[in-house]
Length: 70
Image 1 (cartoon, rainbow, N blue to C red):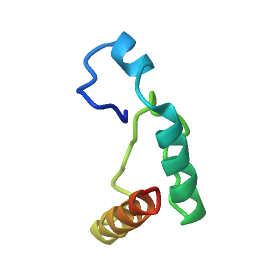
Image 2 (image 1 turned 180 degrees about the vertical axis):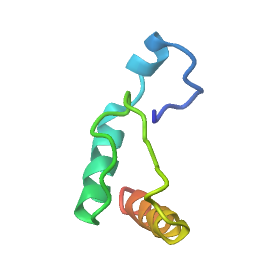
Image 3 (image 1 turned 45 degrees about the horizontal axis):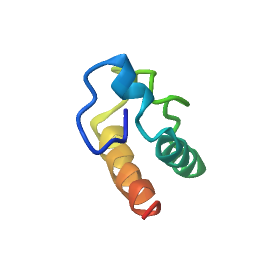
């Protein structure tokens, strides 16, 4: 996940993204009990162990965490 003013299509563009925002989001999620990848370069792996309720709750927490950054 990259934060940038334009789309990220290659490694150079990924490097120029704002990694500080991702770090702040990561910690805001962690503070709320959601464990995301510690780097925007990594991928997320939901699994069948995550129920629909888990995914909805994660969405709600992600929105709350993102709003806390602004």
